[in-house]
Image 1 (tube, rainbow, N blue to C red):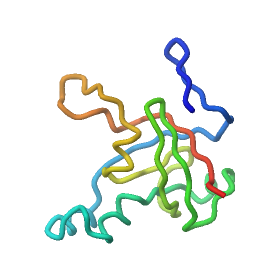
Image 2: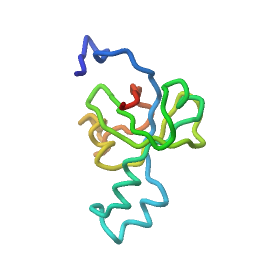
Image 3: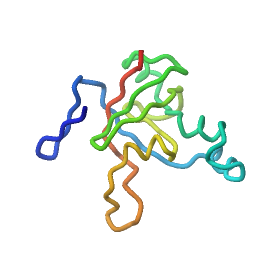
Image 4: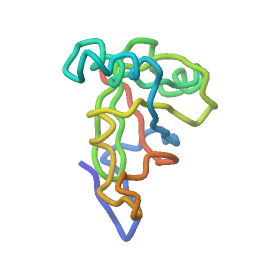
Amino acid sequence: MITSIAGSWRTRMEQKRFIMNAGRTTKQGQQINVGKDNAEYQAIVGTLTMHPQDMKSVGVQPGSNVRVRSEYGEATFRCVEGKVPEGMIFVPYGPPTCRLMGRYTDGTGMPTSKGWEVEVEPIV
C-alpha cells in the first residue's frame, strides 16, 4: 500500500530507493512485427536492468524477481545485471512500466518516464 502525504510518498516497508529511467530497446523494435502479446516481447518489457553493486545491496540475484513501487503504483520485473550507473535502474516501456506512471503529461501527451524515484525490493 502506498501512502501519499503532502507531496511525499512512502510504503509499508522501507526499501532501497533508486532513480528509474524508462525507454525503448532495440530488441523491442525488432519485436514490433510479431506483436505485443508475443512471449518474447513480454519478457523484454518485464526485465529491469540494475548495477551489480545495487543488486547486492538489495539482496537480488540475477534473474530473480523484484517489486518496484512508485508514488503511482507497483509492478514486478525480472532483474538482470547491466551497465547502468549505481543508484539507477532501467526498464523498457511496456505494460509493467505503465503501472508505475502517473497520468500527468506536462502537455506532451506522454507521462514523464525519466528520473522517477522508486523503491525496489526482492520478491521471495
